[in-house]
Length: 523
Image 1: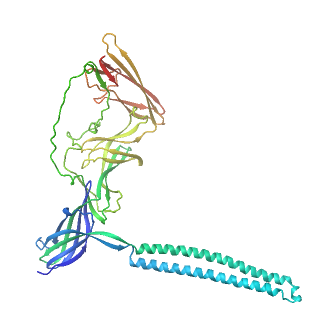
Image 2: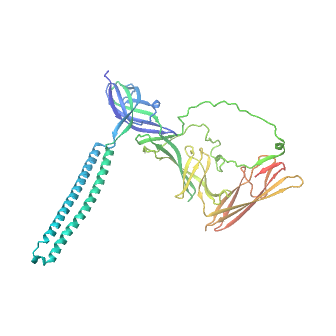
């Protein structure tokens, strides 16, 4: 067998699988190798590569079996080298520019010197002319106009030298500044900075010469993804909801990912399974005080209604939960993607699902005086709808941003698409407290007055939602006093309204809370 030889080869990223805190990269390289042992050095790998995760596979192109080439060893070697900021050609061009600027400075200074010499010559000529004027014959002295003209020409020439000197000084300043900029640029071009590199050294045993294809597989940090969505609502000719799922990725590994196949996984590869901790659950008991036995404290509290109870039609009976420990999901981009290594968010489209939906205007007068537009649908995508931010588009216009929780396949969900500014809702609550004389029971009668106005010139439909307390103990009884305002199991009263153009409607309902005299109620 021949002695070992070293070969350097560049590699190209083929596929990237993004996780929530890292990415799995698959790179490939080809090299011509003969019979024997070879040390192949593969370039193009990030210095952040996770060494233990490195895997290398080799095969001989065109060979039916894998015995023609074998990987004996593979390791990551990191190195630091000093490199110039610019290439030698760029440095030569900047040096030429610096020399030209230096020559301009010299020529401008020489021009100023010549102007000063010319001015000194003219001054000497002026002094000589004044001196010679005393010896002019009397016949010539009778012609002062000629002397005035001569002195005027001399003064004009001297004044012109001052203008030339100012122009020369300005040229010197501009040339000096240009020279300083050229020197600064030249210093930057000649500067050197450290470059951190990572190389994959692979030792191969080749029994049949030919083209060997190498495939590298490794994990790297500084690359991750998060799901996001784009929801478009179209109401004409029929209500349709389009949900586009996007993968927002960040990449700052320093690698070049051009035309790669992208996958996006929800698996948590960095978390190892471990058994739960077994701690003692200590339960303590004490006797109630006389005050606690005599008085029952009841306090109203808000209860969050989970998204599983959104009104709508389910397509399946059992729905997966967010934390049900189900099978991880993996999504794939529709085509090759080029992701820059700049750390900026980059969005890749995963899928687009169009759904039939029900659109209605809903008002929670207790929270806001402006109704909003709500779309309800049943999710029928190929995969679950992951939790994440949502950009909202309504009738081709941007309506705002929101968020959505996890929605399983076949589960009903709802999305709000901004306010309906043409409608206004006002709410007033009046309480009346009474105590019965015989039994001593306390009665709280609450009257809710709702005022709804349509400010537009078109008829509108609206659903008002009001809360009625739901009792959890027998000592507190709640009854609705008006027909047509019965709450659902969650305590919500649904009031359907139809408003004509510029119409105002009033709706009033009452409910009574009865509780014993020993109950301390805070409602």
